[in-house]
Image 1 (cartoon, rainbow, N blue to C red):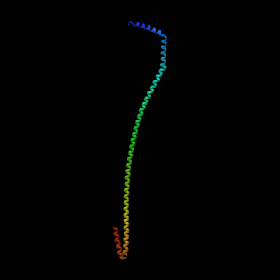
Image 2 (cartoon, rainbow, N blue to C red):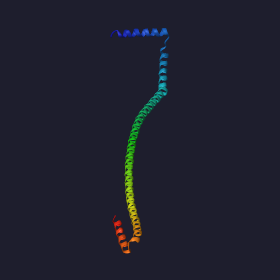
Image 3 (cartoon, helix red, strand yellow):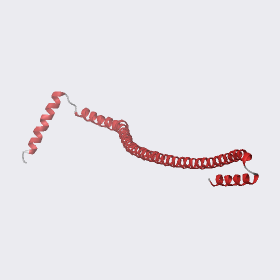
Length: 181
């Protein structure tokens, strides 16, 4: 510690020697240092600080834009998922509706076929009844015609050989026999 004033004195002599050799004038150096600090303060205050504020503002805007883009990306993904789900639901409902329509058409076809079969059976039944009635009517007409012919023939044969009383009995008996058959 005793050596420290000596060291300081020796150091100041060396600094003075170096400054003389290089031509450093301490008053100008201090003035330039003050000028430099003033320029540095002015640049910081009026140039660097607004530029940094603008950069911070732009970084915040960019971050907000990126956050918004990420949010929109998530919303788009959610929207696409909902859209896919809606389309799947609509497709399922359409398939179900088509299947129900097919089933209803099949049932309708079966019902119409059954009704047509019933109508055809009824028509066949009516036709058979009509044919049977026509057959009976024709048989009746044929019997009447045969009876008439038999009576006429018999009358012609009997006119010549039978009396009126016998003829009427014979005709009555023949008509009764034909009526029974």
